[in-house]
Length: 212
Image (cartoon, rainbow, N blue to C red; front, side):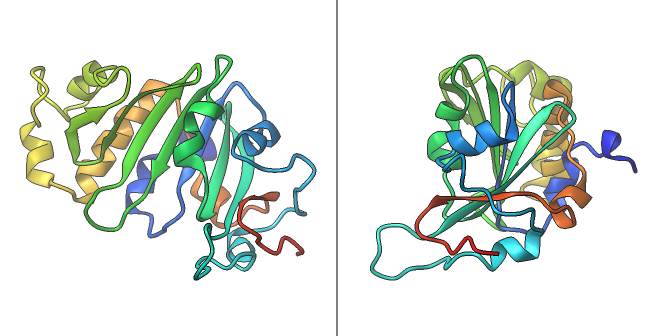
């Protein structure tokens, strides 16, 4: 499958703890800055395994653990792959200021489920857990309700569809919802980019050793 057709549904089966922030309307470098990075702090391009070697992901007695991102651009979106105690959750609205669209995918192996949040113009508009789409939040919690209904995730009254209810928090349910997000926003990110590509990394929290 080519990068243009990878979509993001494959993220449902990805065995990882790193989230991904997507942004449309800014460069990868600007995305890093909005997530808290020093614009001059990029490493040489590194791969996924190298990124995990940069930080101490648990620092007992300190306020923050380390947070690192690798950034790139694909199919009209900048993206940041998060490692450790990154900043995508609290900075998503900041990422989206000045007309930018931003999405944050946070994978979770078990309950509570993985989540997707969407922000635009400096406001978190909506978000929900994959497999728990009946519980939505944000300034416009029903923004994607028509898309979720059309995608077979929810019924028009906002209740869970029979298929989604049957799949629970399983991979099939997550893929169904990620397919809705993929189609609504035109998101596509090749698995090989996250696994194999060498991308510049930035520190966004704590004191990781960025010498590579």
